Length: 205
Image (cartoon, rainbow, N blue to C red):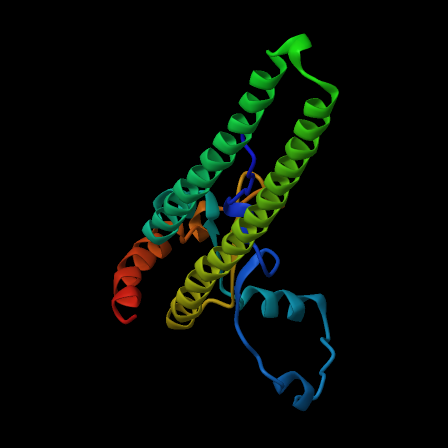
């Protein structure tokens, strides 16, 4: 029986909308006079000057070594905690079954005493389960934020070097794009870069 449930997927990485990277403009917009476009053609020219790309988060899930190692270690820890809870619940239930096997030999005083003890131990288990669940969820959030930070930090440098204004993300579970041109897909480059940057980042710690 599973007592802990924490979902970590590509959709969980989307912490700042669908744009993983957006070029920073600072406060220049407030200092620059607003000039109205004289025609729709001017607007199209402005839009066409933007350089955009996109990454497939499902591929990052599968191929980003840092993400995989962290999630695998997290899942193993969560499964271990779940087994411990399951064993504790099973032991308590076995005690209940063994007690009931006495049948008519059980006195009212023994039954009331066992019930109080059983209810107390069950409540302690429930409190323990809730505490572990909160700790696991908190750890999952910290891990998710760390993964996203690594991806975002890398994409910031990647985008500045290559002149991207926006890099969007999509996944099968959170896809608002009706169509995407593969010519703008930078996923493989990003994954290669992430995997190259990951060991360097970790060795500095």
